[in-house]
Length: 445
Image (tube, rainbow, N blue to C red; front, side):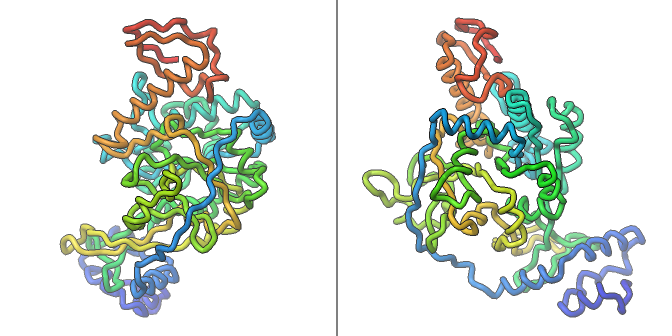
């Protein structure tokens, strides 16, 4: 038995959590060590916060109003300003990659999923190649910070190393693990998963903010001179990872605090399942689609959805701001069924959301971009936001950008544009591409 005079035992006793030791005498020495280590990892002040939250209502204020949305500027001035900032080494890339490919029928981290229509490049490769292209274009190192889950961290590292980091220097890739927090039953008790472990859950995509601080990544990037972080989720192969214009808008906007900027696309219809940008208590926020009333979801202003600025989970963060608020994100609770030692049970999972940083900023900028250029997520095996819909959108953008660059593509030809070929139509080197690309051909540029 854990020493009854130990601080760990007293912490459990004070919180009526000694039931996690009920099988102690049945455990092997190795299992006892494993349980002890897991118990020692508990942040008991956080556990107390979770228990207190169980007594609070889950209801949130529904009072929201429309927020201002700016169109993405295509002017040369913003392009030049953003490029100058990148050349100075002020930009890093931040990616959430904690998910696995189970829902897609894929065994492995989601970032390893073959996402492109012709070559089957992985989601990780698409991000890496955008960074490689930008580094060569601007003559600078752009570090990549990746948050993984506990379960896929080693697999992610191995995948990147096995593929030579897709041309990036491994010293410029910083992989850190998402934190696990206790899952509780409806009475605030830890839930035994086995006789020697209790149930935990990842702390949500907002954990990337606290994880940056706790892992030392924020300090590391400060040492590099990184001032801004381009945030993307791994499952959107059309995300512009290095976007000089967006960076310039974030840094230059006079009406913003220059702490957080976000991209949005117009919702396709009132029922589309995406969070929307709005204002709550005068601060730019995101309202989850599930928290919109039917009236709010369908409300229109001058023929457009009032709350139609759909979030695509692409943000620009100022590093100093993240350092300031890293430990301040609020927790949310969600009721879930979980597998437990004594069978499936009702449980409460606690998570943080990355978009909760928005209202912490004095003001933040929301920038509308073209859906067809920047949003083709892979979330479901079939139907909307599936590999099939994403690959069709990827192929459409490749075709459109190549035509804008001056390439003639005959009907029936299939094309895929590599991130290494350019981040916009005007950057594509057409001299290396056959013209025309004939019907019946498959061409990866």
